[in-house]
Amino acid sequence: MASKLFSLLQIKSIILKNRIVISPMCQYSAEDGFANHWHLVHLGARAIGGAGLIIQEATAVSPEGRITPEDLGIWKDEHIEKYKEITAFIMQENAVPGIQLAHAGRKASTSAPWQERRKLTEAENGWQTVAPSAIPYYDNDAHPPREMSIADIKKVIADFKAATKRAHDACYKVLEIHAAHGYLIHQFLSPLCNKRTDEYGGSFENRIRLLIEILEAVKSEWPNDLPLFVRISGTDWAAGGWEVEDSVKLAKLLKEKGVDVIDCSSGGAVHFQNIPTAPNYQVPISERIKKETGIHTGAVGLITEAHQAEEILEKDQADLVFFARESLRDPNLALNFAHELKANVIWPKQYERAQLED
Image (cartoon, rainbow, N blue to C red; front, side):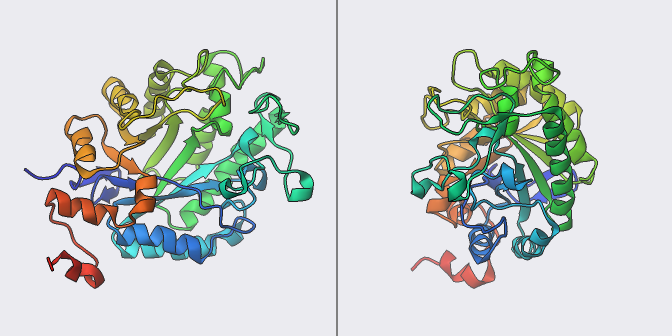
């Protein structure tokens, strides 16, 4: 029986050679938003390693949208040149380059994880963060976010639009809007973070308004024949927060508006979340959205083994399987999975002799 994980999937004009996606993973290795050799080698290695789609880390649409000062950015044309080098290499290896556009909101202006992940002061190259409401992530935060004005919101929408044009100019073939993990768009979605009383707060329709307006702006610059993904947190894992039912309702609307894939993650909105982590713990979110809306979905989270991923697809719980930390441990994850599942795949000619048993 042929492997489902190594079957083709066509989304609009793009054909993925397999269902393995490298999740966007921040590298905290840029300067002023510019990619460098680290990003080329990191992303390029996963293309050599056989994945069908490689999505670049959360790439900030504005300087204030970065999680850390070392995040990648796409807020100016000068960023494009290195990205073109990255996308060209990925495509040379018969993989598809994708990019995730993001704004961190109240979770911006922090240090890198290996620097204890803390809020930065202005003296430490930090900046004033913004959010739907002036509610800090931690109650004792000495640098709370500023509540966004309508002008601030319009700027964010314009920033996503401009970033989309640059992403296309840089030859990315898949674009993902980051609306998960407690970053800005998710902050608007979640009633735990969004206490606004204007047209961007309160009801479900109001809380999703920013995402819908960003989507429309993105679509005005993104070609109709290229795939458009949205990553969401399927649930906040916290009482009174965003729930799976909200995600299903949102996914229906996003499908109607031309989104091709819902990348189904979860959590990140509040520090008091209670996530029941275990292998496949987010797969039911993907399965429910897929089966209740008919949209393509991606499963992610503690999926580490070939047969585990194969079973998710065989059970029709997702159309794609996203790998993050496991792909950090094993850049050649797709080639190794193909060997384990006895799937016939094309190896880079430089690596072909590794298929032979010693």
